[in-house]
Each structure stands twice: as structure tokens, then as C-alpha cells.
Length: 261
Ligand SMILES: NC(=O)c1ccc[n+]([C@@H]2O[C@H](COP(=O)([O-])OP(=O)(O)OC[C@H]3O[C@@H](n4cnc5c(N)ncnc54)[C@H](OP(=O)(O)O)[C@@H]3O)[C@@H](O)[C@H]2O)c1
Image 1 (cartoon, rainbow, N blue to C red):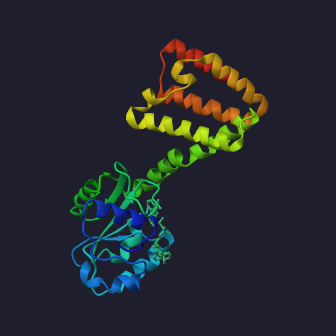
Image 2 (tube, protein in one colour; image 1 turned 120 degrees about the vertical axis):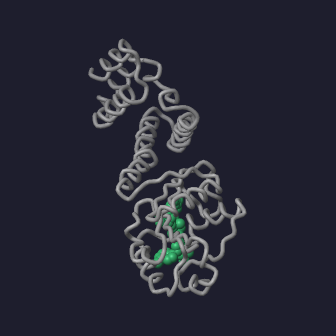
């Protein structure tokens, strides 16, 4: 393992929990080079910052012999960054889709997006992901930007909606810290439901109940107070109606009428 920060530390904790031996570990390439003799059979994971990958790869390229598999842990970078190593090692990626702290193992059930140039490397990485309790899925270089954008849309953008929700609760008289914690818990309970059942069933709220009058009241208040947020409310609610919880025709018509007022 090269890099002992958040991702490297958590992957090591996962290996320890699964009783998978680790031959060498270091924070920098020179320290890893001193343990090179132990690296002839196991895959080497590069858990370094994305921007450090080119210099790390250049340093590894100068080694006389390389580990059989070298995989980076980046979600944003493809295999091309490892290309200088490709003629002497099977290059790969192994990205746990989770926010890691370097101390605890990668949570069980975490998606690990992998890719590999050599056909024999993929099954090996997928098996390793399963051994540490994760769910492997191949994401090729061509699809990687969409994959990463999906993670940001679902994982980061809701924070913008959380901030808007906090602002509305504050305007309703709820203290800021209380509002933040309360809405974060609400979001978590919705996410917990989405983990258990498909999204249409997981959804709660006015669209799930077919409550058109509530939508209309919300939009009257938001149109007055914050038209940009009202536009966002309309757009996202339309997506819920069209793509998530498609109601029967009459309810759908009532909900859409409420949005167009
Ligand atoms: N954090 C996450 O939740 C997470 C989740 C999935 C994937 N990843 C991926 O995992 C990789 C590592 O991210 P991280 O969050 O673990 O980073 P991090 O906490 O900053 O740790 C980076 C590690 O790399 C070492 N390192 C080696 N060469 C370096 C250099 N040239 N410059 C700076 N540091 C260098 C650092 O050494 P020092 O200890 O001396 O600083 C540190 O141990 C990234 O590709 C990231 O996209 C992260």
C-alpha cells in the first residue's frame, strides 16, 4: 500500500478485518522501495492524492521490477495515468464509493468501481472487493466521468438542498443548528429507506401522497420569497413525478397542475 491517509488507512483496516495479509506499506515511494522485495506477488494500491499520481507513477517506472498489479484508488482518474507502468504491470483502478476516515474499514456493502486493462486482473480485484464485504462493479475509463458525476449529483448536491431547507426552517423560527441537525436526520431517514426498497417506494412527502394542494401552497410561498428556489422545487418535483414515483393518470394531472400555477 502506498499512501496511508484516509483511503489507504481504511483499505488497510478492511484487509486487517478480513485477515488479508499486507506485504508492504509506506507513505512515500522511497520508503516503499526499501520494502520492494515483499512486493513481487501482491497487487500494489496507490492511495495517494489524485494530483500526486503522475509523480508517483514516474518514480515507480524507474524501479527495475514492478508488482504484478498496480491499482489506484481514484474515482476521477482513469487508467491512462498509470500508462507508463502498463508494459510491466497489470494496471487497474479500485475506487470505494464512500467517504473514508483512514481508521475504520470501508463500510460493508460499499460499491467498489474497478477497471483493468488485462482481462485476468478484473476478476481478481472483484474477488478482493467481495472479500472485504464490498460490492464490485466495473466502470471503464469511457464511463468514468458519468460515474463520478453520478456520485456528486447524489452525494454532494443534496447538501445544497439541505442548505436551502435550513434557510427556510430558520425563516420559520427554528434555530440554525437545530434546523441543520433535524434536516440532516430527515435526509438520512429518506436515504435509509432508499437503501431498503426501490426509490418509488422509498419516497415520502407530497408527491408520494398525491397531495397537490400541499405542492401548490409550498409554491405560492416560495414564489413570493425565493423564485429561484421555487423553480428548482418545480423542476425536481417534476422529476419525481416523471421518473421516481409515477402516479396514476388523474393524480399525475392534479400534481402537474399544481406545479404549473
Ligand atoms: N478519502 C476518501 O474518502 C476516498 C474515498 C475513495 C477514494 N479515495 C481516493 O484515494 C486516494 C487518496 O485519497 P485520501 O483521501 O486517502 O488522501 P489523503 O488522506 O490526503 O492521503 C494521501 C496519502 O498519500 C501520501 N502521499 C504519497 N505521495 C504523496 C505526494 N506526492 N503528495 C501528497 N501526499 C502523498 C500521503 O502522505 P502523508 O501521510 O505524508 O501526507 C498520505 O499518506 C485519492 O485518489 C482519492 O481520490 C479517497
